[in-house]
Length: 386
Image 1: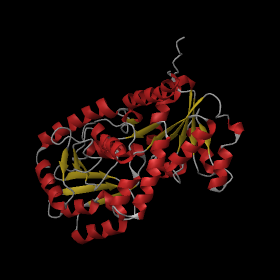
Image 2: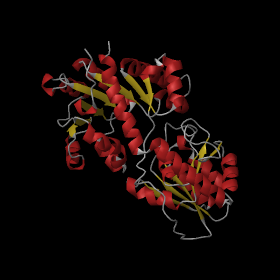
Image 3: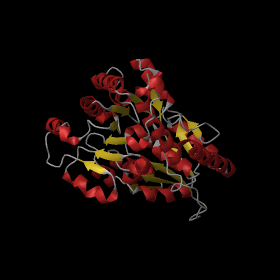
Image 4: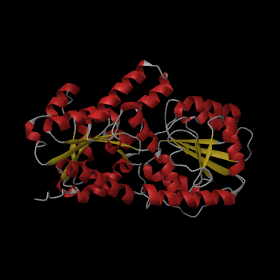
C-alpha cells in the first residue's frame, strides 16, 4: 500500500531563536522584519509556527507584530535549566502530530535536539556561520574556544535530522571535519525581499562627491579600519557607515585624525537601509570573514555595485568581474580596487545589473521559501519510506 506523502500543511514548525537574542534584540537592532520575512512567507502553508525565545515576558508584546504565530518565552524568569524542563512538560502537545524543531543559529541547536528527542520529533540544526571558524579568527586556531566550538558543532550536526548551512564552503567543512553524510547537509542561502530591496533612480545630491556604503557591525572582523586607511588621500569621497559596535570610538578617532568624510549613522531600521543601497556609488564589505552576508545580498538586490574582500562568505556570493568585485583585505588592495571602480561608471552599472539578476535568481524570498518548504516535507517523507 502506498504511503501518503506529508505536506507542509501538516507540519508544526518550532523556530528556536538564538541564545540571548530574543525578539526584543532583533527589534532594537532594526532586524525584526528581515529575520521574520521567511516565516511570514511560509506561514500560510504550514500548520503552525511557534517562535521559541529565552527572552522574558516582554517577548509577548510582539504578538501584534506576528499575527497567527505563537510566542513561547521565559515569562517567569526561570533559570535556563528550569526553563528547559518546563518546555518538556507533556501538556505542550509536541508529542503529537508532525513537529519540526529548527535552530535559527547554532547556539540554540542543542536545545532543539533535546526537545526533538524528548518528543520523538524531527530537528534541523541551522547556522549562518560556524562558531569554530570565528573562534579561530578571534582566539587562534589552537585555542580552547575553538576546541569547545568543535565539540558543540559535532554534537549539533550529528544529532539533527538535517544540517542546514548557507554556503557550499560550509557544506564541505561539515563533510570533511565532522564526517556528516553529504545527503544530510542542505545548503540554504540567506534570503532577500527583492520587492523591498530593488533598484531606484539615483538622486544626485552632490555630483562631485562619490558615496561609499558599508552596513555591518563595528567590529574588528569587519575590517573597517582598512577601508578607512584606503580612503586616505582619495578626493571627493564620502563613506556612510551604518551599524554599531565596540570599535565605534576607535573608528571615530581615526576619521577625525585623518580628516576623512564619514557619517556614522548607528543602527537603522531595516527598511531605512533601502535608500542607502539605492543611492550609493559603491557598496563595500572588506571583512576578514563572513558567513553569508545579508547586507551584501541586500545591496546586490538594489542593483548597487559591490566591492567585497576575497574572504570566506563573500567569495561564495561575488563572482569577480561579473556580479561584483573582489579584493584582498589589506588597505592597499582595497584602495587599488576603489581607484579601478569609482572612475568607471559603465563598469559599476554593469556590475549592479548583474548583481540584481543574481539576487532575483538565487536568493529572492519566493525562491528560498519554496526550497525551505520542500526541505521540511522531505525530512518527514524520507523517514516514512521503507
